[in-house]
Image: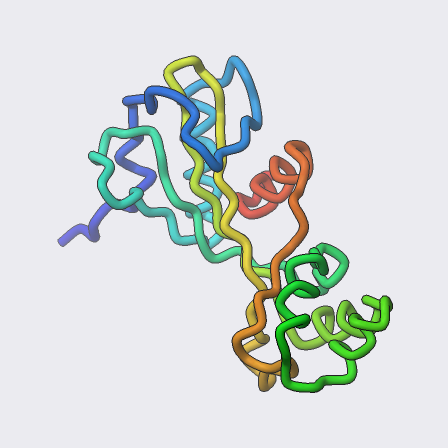
Length: 175
């Protein structure tokens, strides 16, 4: 008896009509072959490759999930967190230091006790543009209790196109 084929083996062939909101253009004049290469690499690297809910199996859009980046405290965007802390918070030394203008202790806590979970939705448009929508979030390491109060919105800063492309390639085992 054969096992079911992974999601990338279907080799989606129908490009999406255009670039939806929230997506970043990674490469122009791309091809289905490049998308297939990313999906196959992600599967080989142990990532979960799945169709996006609502898409048909032949739509050239897939979710790549499961890549974690440790030591990513430097990527934190403190501005949304500061707005959240103005309304009240559970005291933590790193958060107090952030309110005082020093983000270093918070970045140290993130580096030691959290990982940045990097999920991507990648697609090829009918205009032959390779696009991606990043879905990044900080998660406590599974072997340690959460150091910061639960309910805090920890977001990474907005990354540039080249940074996203490199992280996607690393997630797919191609860089």
